[in-house]
Image 1 (cartoon, one colour):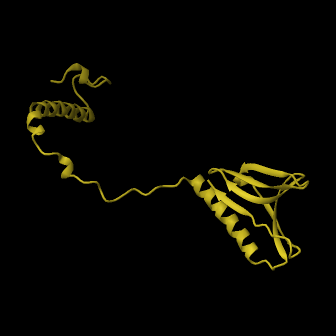
Image 2 (image 1 turned 180 degrees about the vertical axis):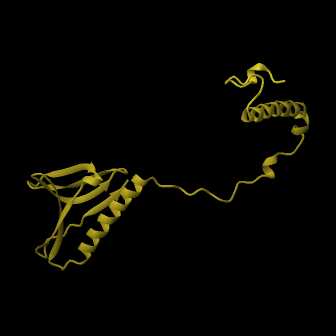
Image 3 (image 1 turned 45 degrees about the horizontal axis):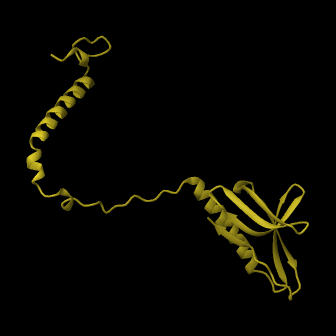
Length: 164
């Protein structure tokens, strides 16, 4: 008969439910195995190390990129492709200008930097000619692009990209 502590807690008395019987048997088997192993420790210490018989599996788990990182990379890749295509199709007397607007503030974009998976830093020059930066979640960014005629003697500026 099983001890009272192993009996069913729902009024089953000395009779155990099927799941509890298997759990109890497994516990007793584990205790017996542990006792048998402790007696044979001397024999196991004489065996050669198992590490030379066991090897690491050849299959490596693929690295799973979080969805937020995938979205940020997709955004950065898409913006870069569009701007580079627009810059590639320019005539010698044309220049691409990209602007970020937020209310009354207008910033001419010079560089787009993805500092983390969700944050973008847009650097450029504001309407008064002062250096300006916008730090924003990349979902909140919207750009306006213009192709303007410039003097061929003036050096053209290209928009830079970087990712952290």
